[in-house]
Image 1 (cartoon, one colour):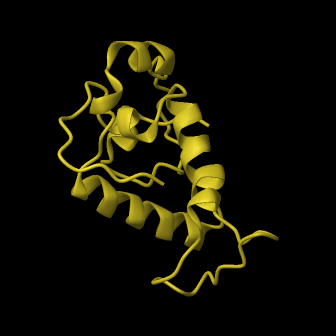
Image 2 (image 1 turned 30 degrees about the vertical axis):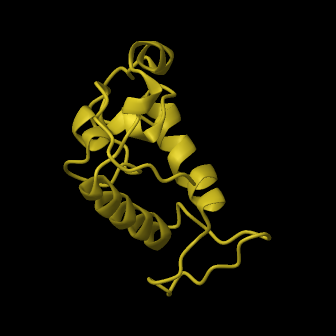
Length: 119
């Protein structure tokens, strides 16, 4: 599937919906070498966007319960595990965008970070 830069940046339709326009992916390896790890950050707005994307991916069947993650598709409070989200959403989207982290996909020049949370 191909994704427009607007989809990758978080504008327009959900990331999991292929675009009519083919856009060459970014070079994830080059981004990871160019941008220092302490700048691989996201914003609160990115997390709000991610939540909306995950809900849409569940509704559209792109994220499904697994043998290890029996989440209810109808529960919008407790959803899939981060492992399920990474395997079924983050990895496919970032692979299509050029194989970079989700943070660098959202902010290819990196961001200043003032709070660190890991998954």
